[in-house]
Image (cartoon, rainbow, N blue to C red; front, side, top):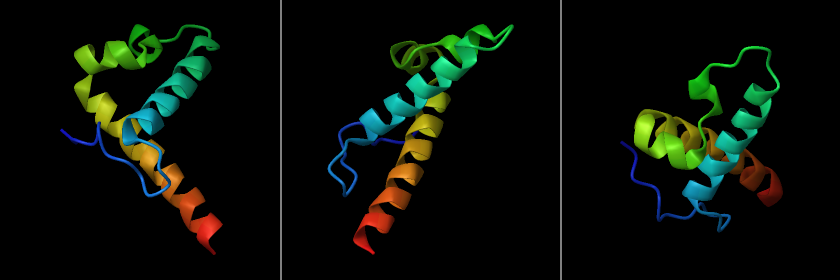
Length: 75
């Protein structure tokens, strides 16, 4: 599992905050679906216990978006 909880992206945002933002956005989308899977509605705190692999995925997605924005701001 990725150990990025206490690390910062070069932008200064923690990887954990980036992952949490991805999860919050996902849960918001899933909650608007007709019959969402219960796993899709689990919060950041819940997936840390029930779906640790999803924590890593959400962090990586958040990092990818932050990398793109960071590179765009630098150019």
